[in-house]
Amino acid sequence: MNIDLAKIDSIIEPYKGRQGLLISLLQDIQAECNYLPEEALVEVSQALELPLSQVFSVATFFKAFSLEPRGRHLIMVCLGTACHVRGGERLAQKLERDLGIKPGETTQDFEFTLEAVNCLGCCALGPVVVIDGKYESKVDSAKLDSILKRYQSEANKG
Ligand code: FES
Image 1 (cartoon, rainbow, N blue to C red):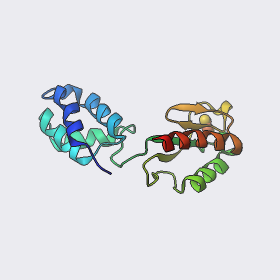
Image 2 (cartoon, helix red, strand yellow):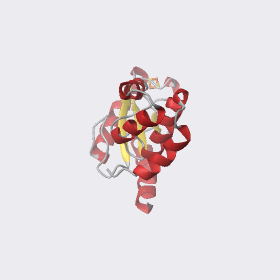
Image 3 (tube, rainbow, N blue to C red):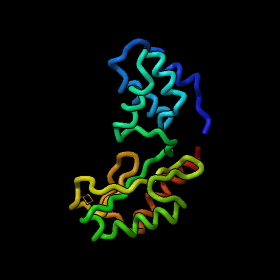
């Protein structure tokens, strides 16, 4: 995956020397790249005059951050008990088949990352799938097909 270092530099620039804003800076980089490239963390460490180990420990502590390249769209399928008994597992298997990836993986075109989670806190709406933060409730195979098609056609449009 190509990283636009000039773009990352422009994100870092206003944060120079502002150590207290480390998390905000990491959020901005993650929003731009969908993950935190190692090269960016090195630059962050220099710009904020913080040890690289400290930058890494913050980047790995928060689940919202990823050190691995992630897709443009993050799909979370719930496999908690309530969703599981209503077919969550079948949805997960369908997503694996349709996208050709396992939970924790990203499609080769970096369009989709799939994650399995244990409960999204809205069990009565299950089975639940969340795409880019949008909750889809009572999902069945047909509904999942139409959701995926919507995102895939957006991807094809570029
Ligand atoms: S088990 Fe899926 S939302 Fe709680």
